[in-house]
Image (tube, each protein chain N blue to C red):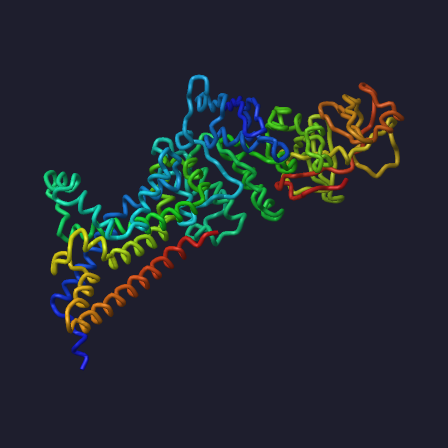
Length: 234
Length: 367
């Protein structure tokens, strides 16, 4: 009776690929995300508005446009793509790596925003106090700033993961919809809706999406609560 | 240790233009709020870069704008105790205390963790988080954290200002012990004459961004004109007494000052110890002839050393009783009627001696 709920091997593939791609998108964009958030929160420099705009661009542009831009820069014949291919052997176009890149780029503004807000809320007097105790700026960042913004980093990571999981437009434009290689959950659901009798498959994957989203949300809540209890500001 | 500071720094329409030199165990920067004492201490600590000036600690040039020297805060080895403690909320008390030690090369670590913890009475707090400490406990941990980093100088910026009187009374004895039992020099910022009178060996009085007076605590604190209006009632002489003897029948302690002997209700200090007390100008009355039949125990013969006419109805008369200089607050009318001029022989009737120090067991005694 519940047999219709069982996922087929190709559906499992899409689920696994989606999680894999999203984790990569999240982790790979994290160091750059922290750096950009720090620079935007703390530094004043010429072109800051430009950087801020550039970071937020994927949030505003139609995803298809972002995907197309990725295709012409990171594609095999694109300026960046051909360089990476020839120097490091990294290929993005029509590979899962490309799906991760698309997810990471789309999720980047959300991640930067969350981390930036938490950096701005750090009491800089604590950093000054650490300085008087002999910590140079790099150590101050590692031992004071970073632990204090951990809740913001976790929030940013969860947002990025969720955004990457749901990414469709940029992904399908950039790396297409190849089962087993670039067919993520949204692409698979989309494919099911395009063929007769695909409703059951679409529904199964929809339920899986909901489950993953809920688990991620609950996990992040628990993590954030643990961290903030530890910090429990004065 | 010699601390040399001379800076010129403008912030909006406030100008800090101050220079002083101190060799004291505990140098107090004393003045009303807005007089520039916090800016000065931030410049010494390296948190503020002065537009012009020089800061030299123990022969080491930390700031010299002329030769473009500016040592950043983390390389100065100057501890800083902030008014708001600033403990790191994500670390335990023990981790907070050890934070600075980590950045101090092993050869420079003279502070002993356990000795400092014991001195400050914070051993039972080590595993706690800062959020769970009282204001007084936080401040003691902050002091410990600065000391355990083995600094060459410790700055304290109004460390007690955010605390109530009970908490202040809890911490002051610890600061006294640090001053007396460690070799670290302190710079202590405060607007409270009671704190400064109790702790300071040297005082730099600040007024509107300038140094109004600097020198030994006893000399600077006797000048009423340097005190904020609200504290003028606290002005007076600062004297160090040696406890000479206790009389158990009447409960009287005899103290010896450089100028003579004093008797007052028994205090807890042991014979031979030195206690510091303030003789507030408002507690001293002047007579031009020897008085008989007065209940006051301490009537000292001396000469008028100086007459300072204040604003309003009152003035200040300095009476030199041998080596002791005490001050009396009298009306300007009395100064005229009694003919109080320099050199005149007078008798100072001291009604009370104020002890700011806790080691006497008395906060103030009426004689």
